[in-house]
Length: 168
Image 1: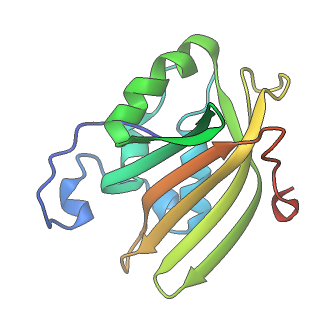
Image 2: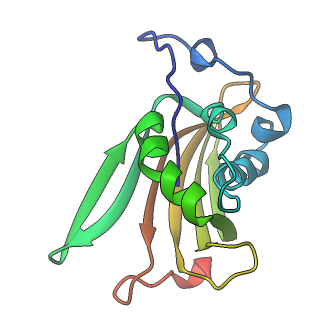
């Protein structure tokens, strides 16, 4: 699930040119590091600001987040950029507390691209009851020095949409 910081974007500029804050090397050196940071930056107790600037360093400019839901029996995507995501979710995360953790992952890599299916569960407190589960679909690429998240799409588990066996 993802975020927002206004970035100075130049059409055709390489991703690094648009970053206003350098990424932590441990966040972007490996796929494991990126996925760990992906969950870490949005998790925290009620009242704790989220790490939106750190979060913004994980993504390419114009990254797209797609939150899937169902209305009247039909799939509905909510498409957001990083800033829209942060504005849409920040209050809920900070007001109520939000801890999302990865429960299982399937990674496929070909050359400099990778796809990660990452099952998750979330809670309001770190040790509280699980409030929901789902799957993040994350597209990444390697630029020769670091990993970038190009997009993230997620869908929550529902009675008619269980977590697949390979991600349990």
